[in-house]
Length: 118
Length: 409
Image 1 (cartoon, rainbow over the protein chains, first blue to last red):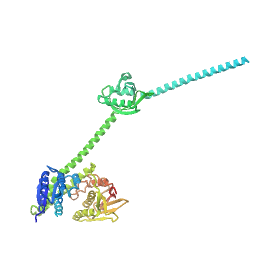
Image 2 (cartoon, rainbow over the protein chains, first blue to last red):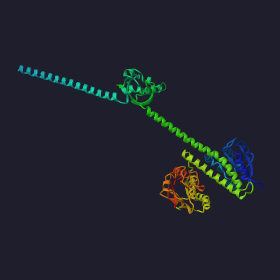
Image 3 (cartoon, rainbow over the protein chains, first blue to last red):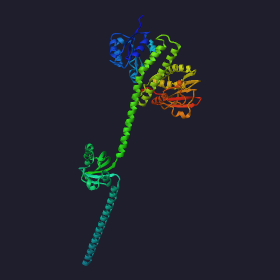
């Protein structure tokens, strides 16, 4: 059985790598480091899970999130928002499935992602 | 008979003249008395005006001085009244203030406004600028305005003090804003590298990169602990900055009280177990199952108080009790069997960066902001926090909060 797809959208290379390593046992991983690439990829594939940073070059995480929510193909896609800004976190809480404030514990991320896999 | 009538008439005439004369004498005397009274009153008023320390002057309708008291001459540096008579009040102000000053009194005359108060800079004969605050009344003759009279005061010092105060206030506000922004910015900038440290350390800990020796595992556990501690400090600093800049807001909603307590209990029990402490929670059955409030902030309050209690208790127990209290209120009590807080330290315990002296060790270190944030959050929620403690016996923190309902209910 093939693993479901997780798209990681994070411009910090270290965090991008950490998220990928954390989720690779349960998910097929694809990573992008800017908002415009994220917008392109979500129009082509249907990830089960998207881990989305907010401050991104190209297009912001909020724009990407809006695009995900506006696309009916992605109705089943779950979004974990990863932000370093608590105020942004509060604003976007309703649009995302889960909002995590950085620093994000891989243990916690793995547990949450595991629950979203099905 | 005729002689009799004549005599009678003569008597009448004389009597008339006498009464006329008497009334004339009376009139003259009265006039003289009035004159004297007037003079006396004139002297009295002149004395008041001439000796007044306030500035008193009059101008004609064009604004040319017709009178200036000694205080006015003295303040403006005139040697005699003659020097100022005929000059316009507009010649005695700065060029920048002239237009507004003229407009103010044109408007008063046009609107026939009885009394105005205005502050403006005046230029003295020595070229010194002084601030003048003046009450100006219209001088009327029947329906016609014939001039202005002013009662004024040198308010330069007052003005300078006010300006210094405003400047100091602006600077303080600016500094406070800057501090909040700085803390917010710094905490934001710290979170990403912290994510790198915590992330890689945890991945190592889970042997994602291969098996670890015991010593390597210990080292990594320490890195994770330090990263978590740093994260808590960043969170506390940011909360404190937000509370101080009043930019924190509550997100109220209905929440399940027992769910919240269970969530907290799971985390706290782990900490208590590590130190060999008992951890108990209790919810009063008289409370509604669902409460209205900011669940995350309430969790923060309870975790802070219970976390502190565990930190400062070496043996015994920590209890969290939620109960209905006075009408329409509920209380949250955290009781420990820890070191206790001496009376002299209790006053400052809710101040930022105050911790018990001599009590900070590696195991119970903290940012020193926890209780300050708790108190401010409790107050933001319309509640109070109090503390009972006995050294060596333990402490009890009690938070009392209003039982609130969703708006519109």
